[in-house]
Length: 94
Image (cartoon, rainbow, N blue to C red; front, side, top):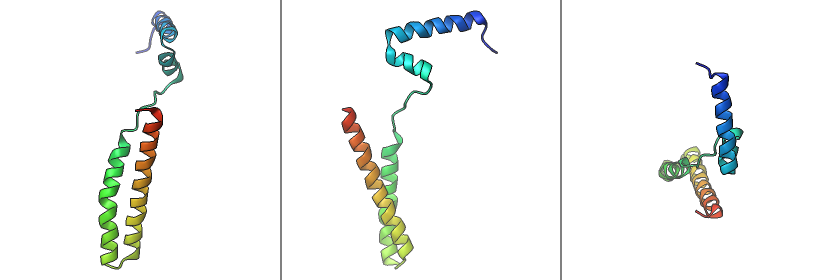
């Protein structure tokens, strides 16, 4: 069910009042998406770390170069993502 003209006008007035009181909230209301924090990064780093090390060790013990390469690359990506997330948090001051 759509909004009536009166409801739409009232919502626009409320958005204007909110944007005058809080510019950040006003930009979020008129600009679209709010930027959500990246909470998935630590989980990805932990999972990659737990998977990549056994892959690399298994690749060496079974003398499978592709398995070792996959484990090594995923370990490098895990370290890179962890460092990038840490630098981003430090720069924001949290």
